[in-house]
Image (tube, rainbow, N blue to C red; front, side):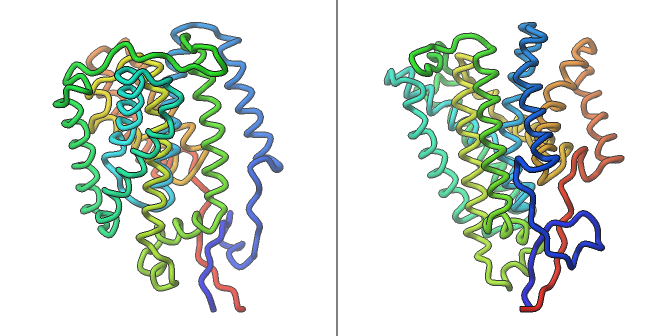
Length: 334
């Protein structure tokens, strides 16, 4: 008898072998295509610069949430320093493009290498830890990156870096907010496809096994440390890519944009959207950006109201607004 993970919609299905739907099959396909069309048409129907700005910032949170979801939602690791990889992407590309005058897109391979090396250095020894210990280490890593960026001359110190050149694609410079809106939309679609494929792969099943019961996964022969590192590196890659786009969009980066609060906001997007749920990450990313904007008229009280709303959501929807399909253990005789 071998333990096996599979997705079910109800307890009565737990002994039935079912194939997971593909990303463009049936209702999934209608939902995905419809959602992409809505996002494509939104700036055309409502071409307000304010709307495009808010939607672009929401896209940044969605991209970050999709990356953190691999770490928190799939592998079950509590990461409180995720903004560190966001900073590595933003500062790495900004330094190479502003100081060394590289085209911003040409910095992408080096930014990814830096993110992967950082994830391996931090994740190698620390991902053997569990629960609160891992959270403390990742929190410290995030603070180290922010303090380092604040104190180095090459990063512009506390004031940050300015005059970051824009992205250039196919000979065209992207200088308008709507340009980055569509760049982020493309990246989100790409991220969703990659995450969906990973979720259905051997790696994804191993992540879920570790999340549900790490000791049981270890007893089944899963190298839990290696698979946790895979999740950590995958999340770092997503954050670094979004960081590069963020630097080009804002034309400036500062240490205050990559602190503990930013990591918590991305984690909140994952939690209120629904850990492990891809549509939930889209919902969570939109809410984290949209709710404070809607409450902007409340001035200093808007963050308090935002916190109260988050508490209410967690009380009435502890599994998130759009939770993932439940995962259960089943056995199958060989």
